[in-house]
Length: 316
Image (cartoon, rainbow, N blue to C red; front, side, top):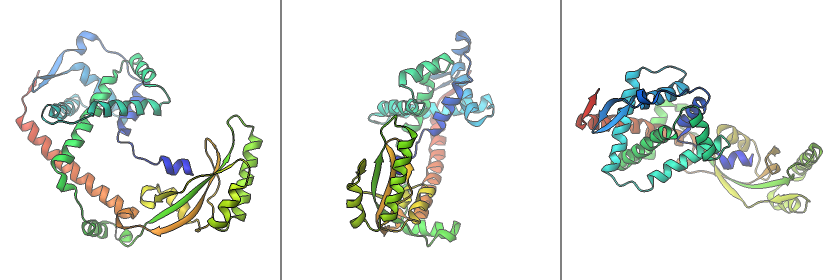
């Protein structure tokens, strides 16, 4: 369970990653001369047929539908306008952030960035095509948040009113902050299955004897092959629903069910549970994020329309 709780995070490039992985199996190269023909010029920057082909494959891999060429071109125009804002605004470390996002994609494929690049190249996909989309979204996100900063401030009253209107059943829900002590029954890598099962039995035996953190933690420390780690505090608003359910069903002073991790068998001692403030109530946080997303999309559309009105766009 610890692995799940500790690793719970949102990845902003999930769409790009999923498409990249699908493309790696399907994309075929296109001719060089045809690819470099310019289709559109946006404020002096060209969009080539190659750019359109690459983005079409990216969209098709993620949606399983062939996009219309006109829609692909419009998306690439928007992307050009977003990236061109780098000339107007100072955004530090943007290229580092792009590289880090690309490295994370490689890690999710269990490869190095070099190996990932080689795999993409073999299938006709240039990493720069993926990085261009990452760069545009990172630039755009920072600019919209900075330009309209005050528009993203939602009071607790606003969130509660929206929640009561759209999800009245959750309006009175509460959240909790859990104080946990991870307890690991160590299983060295390469150990036979019998060792793993023995540690699992030891973990189950400890659960029956564990009546409180004051009494149970010293008991766990006295066991061989057991590591009692430092306390961690997790808010229910930061946990996936399945993880929240596990902790909601665990009494304070008791252990969670054993789970298999890379290091062995792990359980958690629930040593504290207190009601969270409003920001850490799962329903409130979800509604605040929903409001943020709606506001971001609305402001994005308006600003992009403004940029298009000021742009010199030449279709070839």
